[in-house]
Image (cartoon, rainbow, N blue to C red; front, side, top):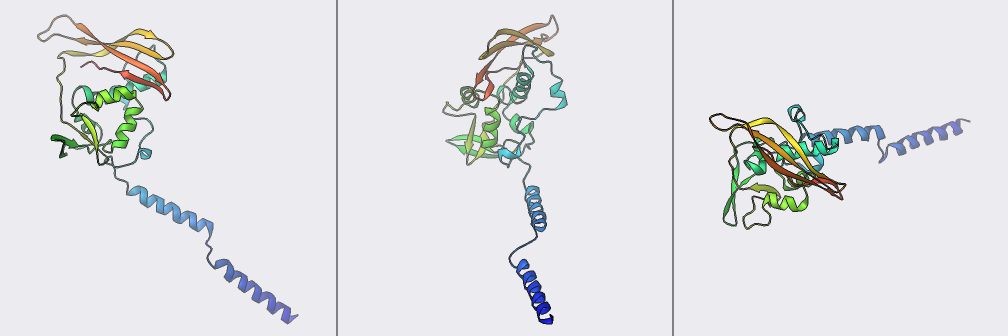
Length: 236
């Protein structure tokens, strides 16, 4: 009997040693993994040097003030949101290219680089990585229109990729004085594949006088990825 107890005791001790050899508590492993992931996450920079997966799936982000913009009532909610996001980014192309950083988390201390004999600024904001910039653009605009907006087909593109970074020429365009909010909209045509309408901007002449209006065309097309803008404008 004593011999049997001794055998059982030895077996228990050996079993315990075997259970600790090369195997760890799953709960302990889970805790260590979470800590490691947390540590890596904290090291992700916030200056646009992130992958597309770390950005919001809906870009660019909208503020409460953006949501107060009067919207075309002939568009559904998804189309209206698409319009707001396109309107948010469009001043980058219609007024001042620096807005890609000044409006979206960048700083006015750009590094510059010469590409094919032309001076470019290296983006340092939310869309500093070219893949992030293009992912945002493709979520809003048709492929052909993106090429037009960025100047991809010209000898000196306005926006281009260099070593994975977004670079752009420093350019600014004038705006019409006396602009008055809010804008209004006028539907031209609407089908399951295309929507065209005009944005009506309101202006007061310099020195005063009667308010006058200007019409700006906008065109949406339905693609395999959903609605995208093939032409866009803002009143300015």
